[in-house]
Length: 200
Image (cartoon, rainbow, N blue to C red; front, side, top):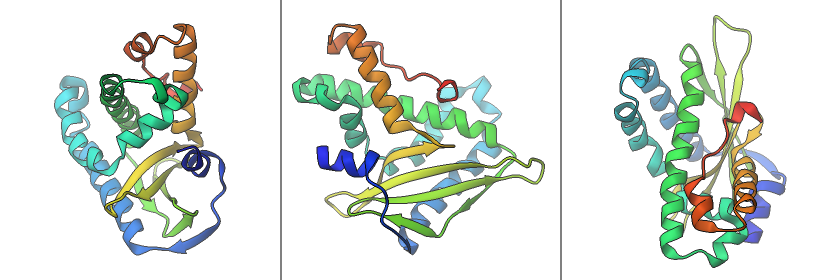
C-alpha cells in the first residue's frame, strides 16, 4: 500500500499514450454525469438526495472507495476495526460524491473535452478533462487517476480538481481531525467532513 501511495500521490507519470478504453471510460461517464446535471441540476435545491441518488448510480461503480478510504486513513487503517473501516468508507463515499457534485454544479453552462493522451505510470493512469464554455474565458480541468483492480476493471482512486488533489487534501484533513481528537478513531470518523476544496 505504501508503494501504491507513492505511485498515486508522489510519483510522476512516465509517458503519454492513446488508450481508447481508458479514454472512453472517463469520457462516456463524465459526459453522462454533466448531461444529468444540466437536465436536472435545478432539482438539487428542492430535492438534493433524489438528485444525488441518480448521480450515485453513475459514480459508485467507477470509484474504488475501499482503496481511497485506506489511503485517507493512512496509518490509522492498521489499527481500525472492520466496523470502523466500513463506517469510514460509507462516509467517504458520500463526501466524495457531495464534493464532486457541488463542484460540477458550477459548470452547468460548460461542455467537456476529454484528452485522448493518457498519462501512464507503472500501475496507474491519469486522464484529464477540460470544461469549456462559449460564454466564459475561464476553463477548469479535472484529472482522474485510475488503475485496474484484480478483476481487470478500471477504477478511479484519486481526483485533482483545478489543481487541488482531493486524495492528499482529504488525507491531511483527516489526519488533523484524528490528532485533534487524541487519535480516538471513532470520534474522528464521526466528525469526518472535508472542508470545502475552494477554501484550500
